[in-house]
Length: 190
Ligand SMILES: [Zn+2]
Image 1 (cartoon, rainbow, N blue to C red):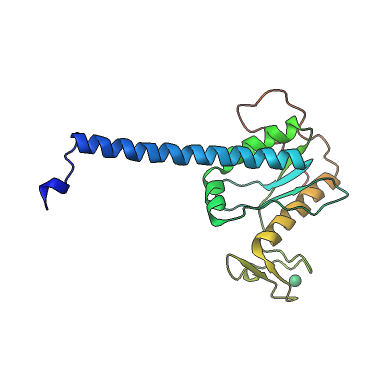
Image 2 (tube, rainbow, N blue to C red):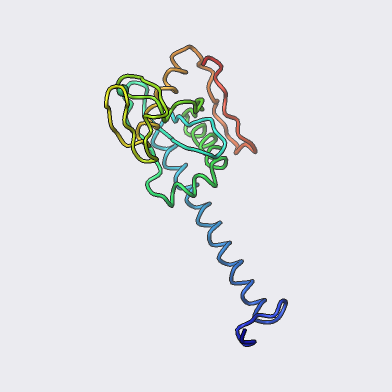
């Protein structure tokens, strides 16, 4: 190997390269933080009730709605990049959504993630075969087809409504301070 192309460890060029890599990492971290704050602020300002899957990091779907009487607005990651950011920042995303919805007088409801991506919106059939690919949902029983993220988000929203309807009304109260950890109430009526 040509010695001129090699960076000697702790040498001048090595130190320069290391600083460059660190700057890139800082840039990525800042971009992620900005994205999470913008997204959670927008969602919490525009929706009084937000339902999320109660999961760690593996998988995600989010739905949001203005009022119980007028459901219909689904908030989803728009692109692969946004999705990747959300996967890495899921717990932070959830923490921010929790306190920001509370600040705005709304509620964050976490629902069990089981079968949200496998349940048919039309006939209710649950099967892992309904989810043929990452992107497409196709019910093996009734033939209903839809974007898989949309199906997941609507199932999350329905599960959130079901939790509200079963009588648990002691949701997240108004906060005046940013909490240090997630304070999402687990509604024990599933
Ligand atoms: Zn079906």
